[in-house]
Length: 450
Image 1 (cartoon, helix red, strand yellow):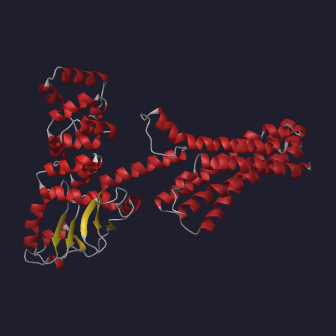
Image 2 (tube, helix red, strand yellow):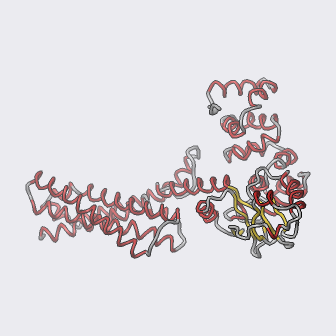
Image 3 (tube, one colour):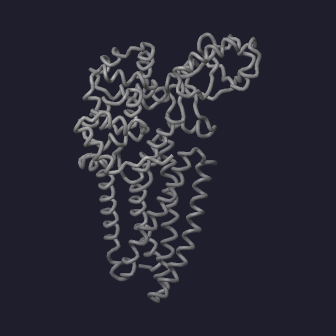
């Protein structure tokens, strides 16, 4: 199958067909196109054109298209649809996707849309999902699943599974519950097929099953599913009742969103923004860290001002200042990036002290190697061994301190419940610039005896 590629020619043709309202040709072009690719097309259209396509195509396709659209495009389209039209789209979606879309609607429209949903059980499930925090397993789960009771026999179980499976897009697992819907375990399809039709489910099901609480953090859910290679995981409430399931496609979205957020934090962007956002939104996201960098630079300049006399006597120290600051920032970012990655993947082993010692020893080894190169270069360049030695010793100290700061800061933030990704980028770079400059000139003063 050839991957879909949206070309300028195709987009222009679709816009032209919309303009002349050639519905037959539009349906012919888009009929076999995957809904994700249709969403890509609609993202490039203006509001009226996008709304026209959504109203033209069948709801069983456009409902999935809506879930793939950019949020601002989806919002604009929904504003142009009636409550009944939105309800028709919602009815074609799984409850988790439906709840996500309804949650984006204005409060005064939500009730009207829900009342227009003909499948009342589907509507009740959506309303149930809306009460959960969006940043929880409950806000991430879907209500569609296959569950059987431990008191049933195999024959009754198969019959019930057929009825339930009609409302489930993909059956990843079969869950076993008691009369109060308490999750008891899972049922292997192989065991079900090989068991006698009169056998009791309680005699063939597997009592061990991984699950998460409705209030669990989505990132923790992602870690569990990743660790145990799960395609789906059941969600239980406070008393152990099975209330939904989370599938791998939802977790991929969580991982992507978290990676985007961490990348932006590491780059010094304080809120979730996209390239197409307004200049004002982009400025608000970037300016806090830029101000931090400005004050950091002013602090470094002030520190250098305190060593003005020494710099006047040994001007060469001034020329190596950018190198010292750059090395401090680079080492700090490297150390913090490794720690943040380990925290995100939950694979950091050992105590905090052992981790700090390891990183400082690593920084010391790297510092010695780099300092030896710098010593030889400066000595041959200027012919002043003592000054070259002062700069090289300073580099070792700066690298070790930068390694300590880069390791300790994300660990400290994580212990305090703060996203450790904030430690990378401008925060570490600025703090290490200040400490690096201070250590550099202080050690140079001691070695040179000024």
